[in-house]
Image 1 (cartoon, rainbow, N blue to C red):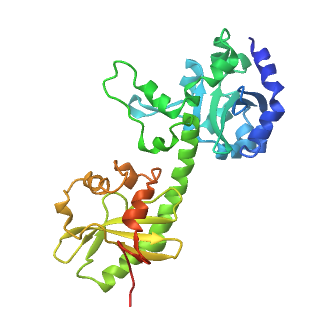
Image 2: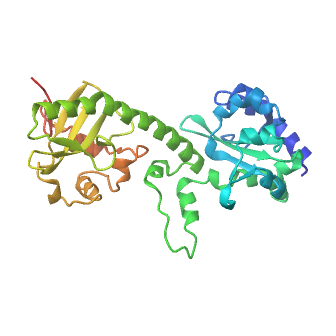
Image 3: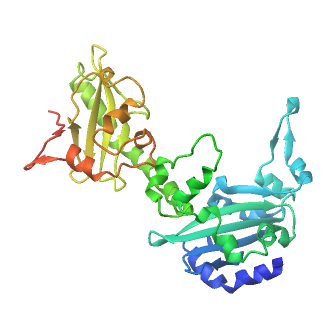
Length: 357
């Protein structure tokens, strides 16, 4: 299959491809859409856009780069072009020219944008890759695909690792003879049964949302609480600190209707205690969580994994990721229902509302 034949194949489903990408991709980028190919179930898609570059492109359309994911930028170029992109420094070291400068100097002629889509969770999850080329030859843009021309196009495109089940993806990494096993990371465990593409896209979104959520909770609720505790009860709360994050560490489920704030409280005698607080959005109240006895933290063991040892006795928290990484939420109904919000009739068993006179 030639580049022209492959391009013609992409154009057959160009309109359907456009309809899938339009809600998520900037319309100025979609002007350069070549087309796409769906798998047999029509729930997966691979598509391409080719943007011709000249020395004025960045000045006129550089704003489009604001919509690019910088981590997916790459270059396909000759050794000669690579040398031209280098800026040599004192001592023989070098750095590289920016994309803007490289375009304005005419080093790149085409930008290939590859789209990979997987319809899951009732929506299209779209991953994008951006590759700059120093050639005007369209065949070089699709050389990896055309190189596999003896393999059916769909087999090549949709059997790539990005479409593998997340569990299979990690299993593939543990090839025979590998010395250290690569376990499924905590943040990827919720996506077992889904493609690695879906796992990456939804995890990136989840991380962004949860960073914002934690910042909000700390600024709006934890910081004022900390100040009031240290003001009203200076002997008990000489200081309030945390193990990992500034202010407090946090655990919460994905729905974020409530959260657990984990702190170390230092009293006037320098005794350190583990103390946790709960904020609930439903009634806009703060509570002290009293399930664990208020003994000095050293009795639990003064090391980082001690928190895991404490919480895994009552929950699915078996890794520090649940405490220190915003992309990992503790979706454990038994823990929240029976160890945090358990009630005896209408009263909470392990929550004491915090009030200040």
